[in-house]
Image (cartoon, rainbow, N blue to C red; front, side, top):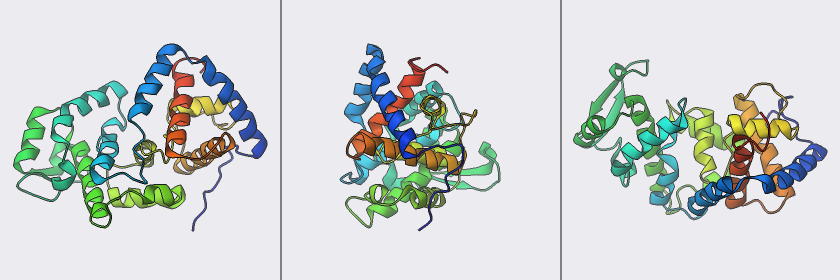
Length: 264
């Protein structure tokens, strides 16, 4: 089984993790009330526990992630709102039924001309939303992955919890295919309480805690996995490793920077 290569930009020795945990536990008490309300609202809905999730429940944590890749959060949320009416059972048909919804990549780019769109619902979605076809294609890939997993088990994403991230993330990227980079895959796993998305806010908090030493806010693939290992150590240092606790530390690390408790 491959092991994560620990880059020198991620410092995760026991003493550093212990100091980071102490600062985290102290600083989370300084979050403003509006941040606490937002965090509690999110944690009332997430994570979707992969150990017990049905396919329909798992789909809620999967389908929207390509809409947030390389764009502003507000834009991604607008696309999510536009697509939501079409998504309830999309995992069962997208990519499987050409009369309903099939997108085929026929070119090398991400422009509309690089894709062939077939099916009544695909055309309805294209007419009703402003979502780029390459993002719809990535969502279709997620539907195909979930169908395959659901055919094998009533708890299709159980392995998201049991398989190490070192092997899980590369495997998911291969199976999800084009449109799913490492950060998008980790974003999905974040809503299952399996990983943390090392975005600009999380990396800034970890820099202040002494774990992330790079001046960059954009970790490489190896760095993203190493950051996740460090955050898991923080969770274990402060209690039991569960999906709920991992999701909480991710969102609180993000909030500490986003709400200015930690200076940029």
